[in-house]
Image 1 (cartoon, rainbow, N blue to C red):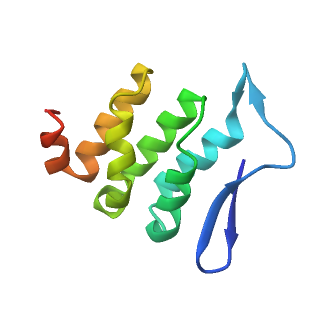
Image 2 (spheres, rainbow, N blue to C red):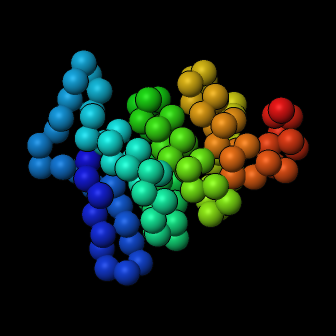
Length: 116
């Protein structure tokens, strides 16, 4: 995957020309999600792009997206509903990442969800 900036209003995580896979893990896609969180740039563009890419079967990628959202702190409040949903995910890593993200983004919502 690669980060694609489509004008002033859209940032997407698009398909790379060449897939970088190691042991069944799409490294490029993980790197793109991780980079968005580390950059902390353009939350109005990055946060919706991360939210859009959260659904799927790749739990490591989904966990990486949740951690990236956490790195935006309160600038990622629009993600709270999907993060709360991820608290009941079947995958433990996704649940843990969602709990961490919710605590970082909205401590009050985390307390309401029973997180300490």
